[in-house]
Length: 100
Image (cartoon, rainbow, N blue to C red; front, side):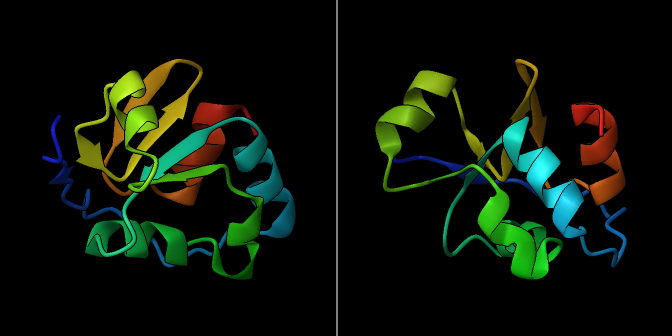
C-alpha cells in the first residue's frame, strides 16, 4: 500500500436518503468504514448520515496500519460481515448488508 490509496468512484446510485439515528447506530455497530478526510467520495458517503455520523465506526487514513491489515486499497470501503464493499453505498444497501 505504501501510501497509495485509490479513491473509489461513486456507484451513481446514491439516493439522497439520510440515515435515521436508529439506522446509523445499527450500521455503526455492524460495520467498519475506511475513509479519507479529503476524499470526495468519502465525504459524499458521510453526508448520507448527517448528524448521525457519530454512530459509525470509522477508520481514517491516519491509521494506516489498520488500512494495511484490512487490505484496504480504495476509499470509501465498508467491511460488513467480513466482506468488502468499495465505493459509496446507499443507506438501503448498508441496511441490507448489515441485516438492519
